[in-house]
Length: 336
Image 1: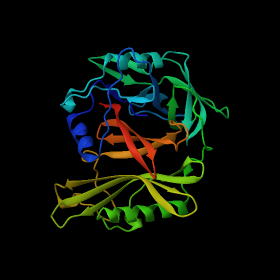
Image 2: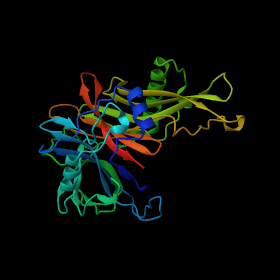
Image 3: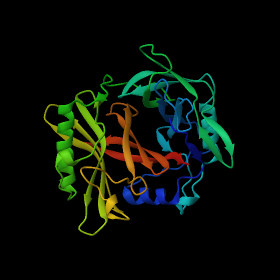
Image 4: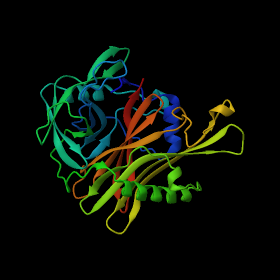
């Protein structure tokens, strides 16, 4: 797992401005002093032998997504009129240190079902000075099936009262037939955004099959389409996070986040050829499906996604409202 630095600043100016422009971002107030909160984390466990960017053994981490106070969401950062003035309040720092106390145990969730337990071994933050800290290895996972600590895992961890799953863990890589259906659905949604593209021209690395409720399957992935413009050295970049749900009557969208950008090449040799892609990490937000869990009783699972933008990241939380998911919150995360 690459080493990541938590900056007690919201995000870089460009990142914050992009998020605000790209979608209806739901910023919420940060955790306040004296508030008793539960926390939602993204839990990551590397595969045995995996190395980080520095060549050191990758470690298991708990990265905060959001806090909940009596059912109300709280974030990690203060939001000022200028996005660059956001900063982590002392209450958040204090809460995280309490959650990272050695010996505490939290439920681990995968595919909307209880997967196991995370046992905290030490603080997940190493203070570096100047208001920064490394997010580092801090817990040992143990699955309900008794797997030992070095089993690759990425899911969610919840510190609050026990949640009740409504379905079994059905998370896996989609089959070839499911992926084909997913890309056909994605092609139709691209067309609705005036981007006519065939399914086989959509670039997607992995489609996840899961469940968000007991009586329906779901498919989720982030994908990209790049189309050259008639204007020289210009490429249109279309990214989409898509979650489809199906219950025997075909697949239909329940979450769509569509983003577009323009890439300008320096010379003709950089233009995409033969199905290749132009690197676009510095130009557009890449939002990926992380996982789901039954955060709200008697509802479909809540969905957590991760925004990857250049050297920064943030998380979003979605809640089912009617036939689709509605963004509730975007925040936490950090940058380098």
